[in-house]
Length: 318
Image 1 (cartoon, one colour):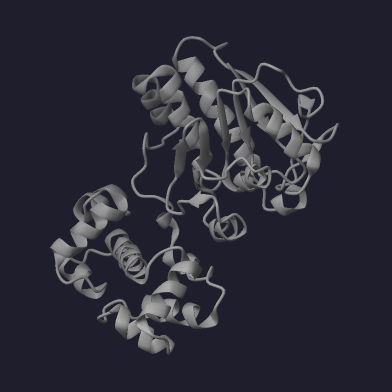
Image 2: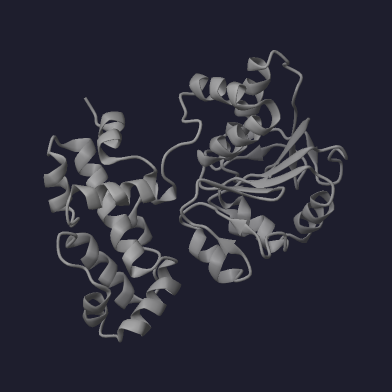
């Protein structure tokens, strides 16, 4: 099975080599080191410089890439904007999208697929700091901002950077089964399926996404007052809007409802307390605005698929 990865100047190195390492380890664990063949494709000839300054020598270019690619992945980059409109890349993606078994992206590589028109009507994800831009520029794309990776037919998209390893591991499970995927996960010290999603990574970061200052102000106030009764009516009044208008604009700006943002923020704060303190669950729930430990437990199961007690046992530092 030939795995090709599109790289380009300023590519994120881990987006490129992380998935390749997962596939290579899977072949080793399966006792078939030749199960995968790898090809790094570049839009330009000669060595590339990655975003971390490392030099990469691609195997081939868009004009000479192999015709028998099984799985095509598009890496991301902090500078992905520089090549989003490249017509040669668009044409190349269209050509291979018709023939590959699996087409996918890592991190902001989803924006290259979107600009090529290959995500229309599809469920996708990308790095948390690109989800709002992807949804805004391509309203026909069904962005799922809290997912680590999303599969829609033969299209696979992953969240930021290390999520490319999760995506590759899911593909390994398809190719070799759960037992081999689990061996790779153990070798790489990964979850086979990590709990939670990109909400991992923070309501404080999500609060920076909103374009309207009034919505951002409310989000920041929520984050600083989680133990208060945070009703939609009360938040709308704080923003100086009607409840209906506030809820509509909040969802448009944040890609989540006010209630979802409040719950995510409370779960995130509770996670930090569970990791960093010995406070009992009842105290953690009180400090973060949950009505009781049962309410906190239900929110954790919705958001992270793990209970607060299990989360603390797994993640609290020594």
